[in-house]
Amino acid sequence: MTSRGGGGHPRWTLAACILASSLSFVEGSVLNVALPAIRDSFGAGATDVQWVVNAYLLPLSALLLLGGALGDHYGRRRLLLIGTGLFAAASLLCALAPGFALLVAGRVLQGIGAALLLPNSLALLNSTFEGEARGRAIGIWASAGAAAAAVAPLIGGWLVDHVGWPSIFYLNLPLAGGAMALAARFAAESSNKDAARTDYPGAILATLGLLALTWGLTLWSVQLRFTALSLAMLLGGLLGLAAFLWAERRRGDRAMMPLAMFGNASFVGLTGLTFLLYGAFGAVMLLLPYVLIEAKGFSPLQAGLAMLPLAVLIATASPLMGKLAARIGGRLPLTVGPCVVGAGMLLARRIESGPDYWTTVFPAVTLLAFGMALAVAPLTSTVLASVDDRHSGTASGLNSAVARTGGLIATALLGAVLASKGQGLIASFHVALIAGAAISIAAGLTGWLTVAEKKKAARDEPERPSALSCSASADA
Image 1 (spheres, helix red, strand yellow):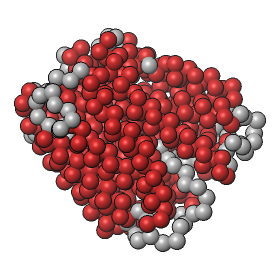
Image 2: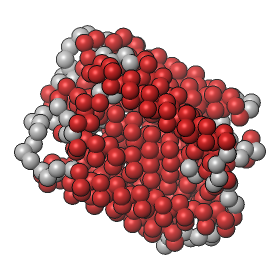
Image 3: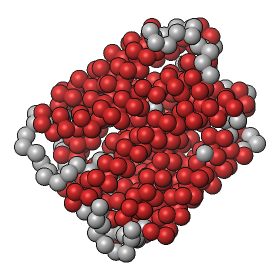
Image 4: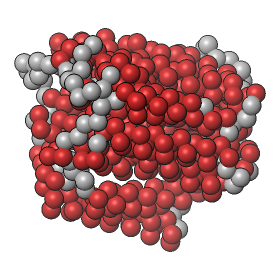
């Protein structure tokens, strides 16, 4: 591989970026098998379980674009080091937390760290490599992230079983230490101040709006009724997000989310598809290991093994679908893929209490994986093709943020399911699966109605995957 220059060592820079981004991919997949143990350890309720997940997703969703802009302005290596160091310190706080409040605080700091390190790990690779070497480096980066997401639930499940749930956070420390040592020693600094969009007002408004909206939905979801506080939070969240859109419109191309991109109907449709598909998928990926442990009596390690086919199939099949989509266009896979995901959710309704796996869980997980594999790579490439070149990086980052936001909102709606026990948990899980299937099919219809038919390839250089390319397997 060859680099662009600048004094760095390309191979060790690639290794540093893989280790840093693996922190987020591992964290997204390992936590779900530990949630029941965390809940029991603190005597936590359903709302608390939701916040263990959403305390991480909220800052990651809101600050992902700002993290990339800060790297452009102040230096990508610097922001990678800051984000990775913050993630490591936050992981230590989570592992040592004597109470639930400090655990949630640690999860918030992890989300901020991930929002800094994820976009800058990819941007650092983009500035280090060029031509075919760049495509190979980013392919290795994406594959390594998917592999980490596949292995993490197995390691995490074993650690929860034999050491305790705090150990899953200690797992992050050697990864972070290795990433920081390699980046500090071998990575060349790069920046692009002309492209920087350090939109602090937008970031603050997006964070506050999403926080209030998530809080209101979480309060509502446990008892499925509105209170004065939940209504106030929902109204405040909607007003905050409206203020965010107003601020972005005023900033024009200096905004972290330039609204000019939404003048393209295809991009609007793809954004809606992403939100719906990743929201439904994220909810099921949170609930499935939780139900396997709480209602079917699986150990955390068994639950991690049960999810293994999903990450493996997505990681291996997605590149093939990316090549197919390059030939036939994104419309068909982005219609069929979400519908297959919906079918997998309906098939998962066969999951009941009891130890059976091969006849109920495995077929559903396989179908879910196949559907996501159909959609992941075509979604990334179609998003990039739907905007002009100067907005391609922003569009990719925005689509990744929207995917996380879908998971954030979906998790906030799961209170009644997470509050259920025994057979009631199975029944609530089945209701959530029906809702998820309907949302996934709506995502497929959105793809059919809004994604344009294939035209001549819009770009001749190799596709540059975004963090979204790994998010399906990472969030699993």
